[in-house]
Length: 315
Ligand SMILES: [Zn+2]
Image 1 (tube, rainbow, N blue to C red):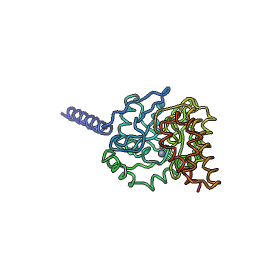
Image 2: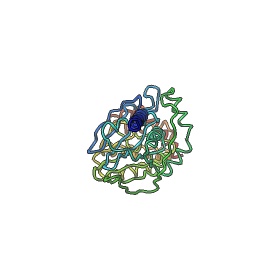
Image 3: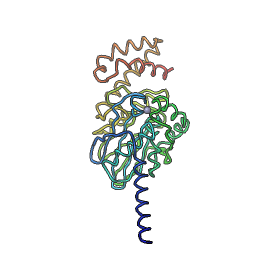
Image 4: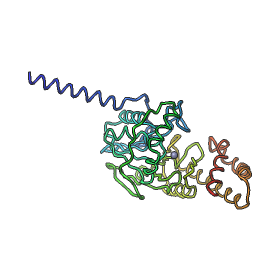
């Protein structure tokens, strides 16, 4: 009798464990995983732009590295629900436990999935300044995303990073060496990139782009962005993984440096000559559209935004 009871309890325990782990990874998302290199994978969102009802908040990429000691994840999406979808996708390719998460920066489409990972015991890393920015946004950004997606992102629990990076450094994750490279606020305050020297892969978050012009934000620093992109070119990566859009090569980074440097210079000169934004934009179009329209999906539609953002930054 005692034996049976013990066995029943064991089964019950296993059953509840099974149910709770099934719940922990249940998700309406069935993300597909793209192999990038040995033990490196991407989950690429087909949607570019802001979280919306149509994309259910899934507008950004996540990537992960499978090591012999566990899985390292780069970016967790716009909601806890998406985070659970990422976990489910990771479990489809490896039985290794998910042990570490890195948030590339503080924009909420890259970290609001954190709670799904902290709930399964993963340690969350980001720069100290990203983490401060996340804390400033806090619940406000959960509510904003819920409104923007008409409820699709839900009321995500918040899990802030607890391991703070403060300077360029190398760390081992299992047998995989990772170098954290700071963009000095190039895209946003506290951006960090992950360089895998052995695989020659850079995980760049929103500092790098494949099909669209570089993402300008009010607090991004264009000269620092250009410096960071030049530093990436020096590393000579074989593969460049982006925060939005498909993976790419160093050619995209070279293209972005050239575009940013040219437009920045035209805005600077225009400013010195007292030209209006419209005038500067006409000049940018006349001098650069021929070269860059074929290289970006949105050069024609986004060049005025690029010029306006740079103009404001130089005031
Ligand atoms: Zn961003």
